Amino acid sequence: MKQILVLGKVVAPKTPDAWKQCESNYWLSFSYVANLRMNGGSGIIDGQGSSWWSNANEQKLHIDDKKKCQRPKALHFHGCHNLLLTGLTHVNSPKGHISISNCRYVYVANLTITAPEESPNTDGIDISNSNHVNIHASYIGTGDDCIAINSGCSNINITNIACGPGHGISVGSLGENGAYATVENVSVKNCNFSRTQNGVRIKTWQGGSGYAKNITFEQITLHATKNPIIIDQYYCNGAHNCKNKTSAVKVSDVRYRNIQGTSAKKEAIRLDCNQFSGCRNIVMEHINITSNVPGNKGIQASCYNINGISKSTVPRVLCLQSKLVQ
Image (cartoon, rainbow, N blue to C red):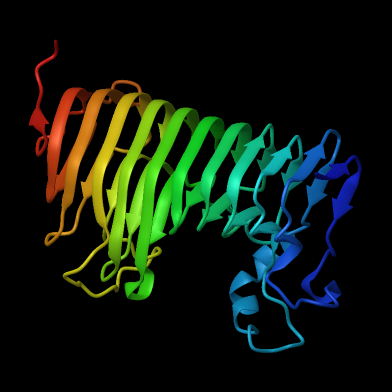
């Protein structure tokens, strides 16, 4: 077993020009370390990202300039099997805070991850090409996804996460630039979303292939969330000029159970699926989402190219077959 105990404050250079070396896109990186334990108590990892955020677009122009650095992610684990990460506080990363890629049997718990709501691309935890990952009992509030589950992931278990601000917990985005992408066997349970842009989200680009299947969101609490439940198979990264394509990552066997709370927008549920492949076997049970605006009863749901069933769901999802309450 290899153990790292972080008791003090680890601080990144304050400005982009202060970074003398930037051979990778990561600040702190661990690769191919088996049985690694990283623990914190009073430990803080501070990325001092504010100077990067203010000129994020400018920094992208210098990707090919060796004298300039790309915005780094703060902490990266690659190919680390049997990884334990607990007890740390992460603040203000220039980009994403924690990246987990090509790892197996990962346990993450009792983290605090924070960055301002307006900080760009400061995801809390990004997971890719990894399996048997458990994320538990943590607070994440940043300027992007609290947790993002990307292609190549399976057997992901997320429980007891307090998310907000941020973009919610997302599967994807998947299938960008026609890529083949897979995600399966994901469980998100007992999570709270407070004033987030999204709650539980699946997002795929047009033109991709592959699948996202066997995904469960249950026992979710929402407070003034703008998009509480969303499947978006027309994801375009905030733009509106993506060309329509006939292929898409297939979304199937998604279950939403025991979700309650308030929406900050009139449309609380949006299931926008590809007209050619659609979304299959979507189940919604015991959903109760109301408006956070007093006296506003106009909460709605929209859905396109989808099949499945709903039971005791408010607002009603008209394109799903209603199942009688038993």
